[in-house]
Image 1: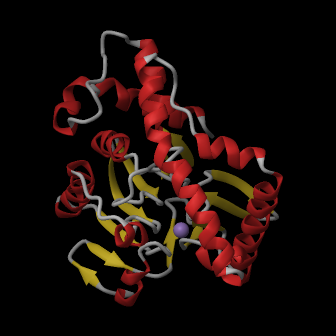
Image 2 (image 1 turned 180 degrees about the vertical axis):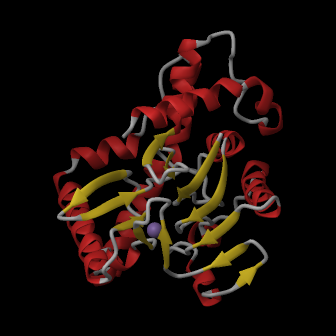
Length: 284
Ligand SMILES: [Mn+2]
């Protein structure tokens, strides 16, 4: 299906917790005029600790570059895990551009500020030591999450996010998320835009905050979400595992092949595109 814009962030390629297979499925089902990569696409931090780069991670990069080659404008807004790319602010490589911040205009004329969001992360800003400890524990949780989901899939149970569950349970995390969202919306207000798109906290959201539309496109480690804009400028959040699940229940015959062979997905998952359209139509 064709979309005007797709926003994805926090893919964390090079990190064991990355859901590259699910992302490949999603990318093979959508075409877009503009693809925004809203930071933490390549987890340089994690790769410095442990070198991890399986074929599926390579395929994600190749799929994105392939889209750029076929006419999609790809705009990469680096995050804190891939901040090395921030030195390339303003660089243009054919259809791929790097910008530390960007203003996107929707089909219906709304101006959106696009940024990763780590500059609003007070924990990182004021206590790098605390952030590092927290990040290590979080990394461990995220690293075991795929194994849990692998087991769950074998028993036909839906995708489940351990870290997402813990995050929701923790009052402090909830307060932190609230603070983060407030500061991002505040910054957008100062910049005189209608909306803001960020990532970083791995929590998809789209809601009005006193006249500013706050959008967070989530992540591809746990929730596997993206923000999309259709041809009329209508925005919605896509939760890929849910669409996938619904599809499997609705048409058991159209069983998706094991999510490891992206090349074989196109004919078998045509109904996925239909489910996507239905999902987008549902969200107004
Ligand atoms: Mn980040």
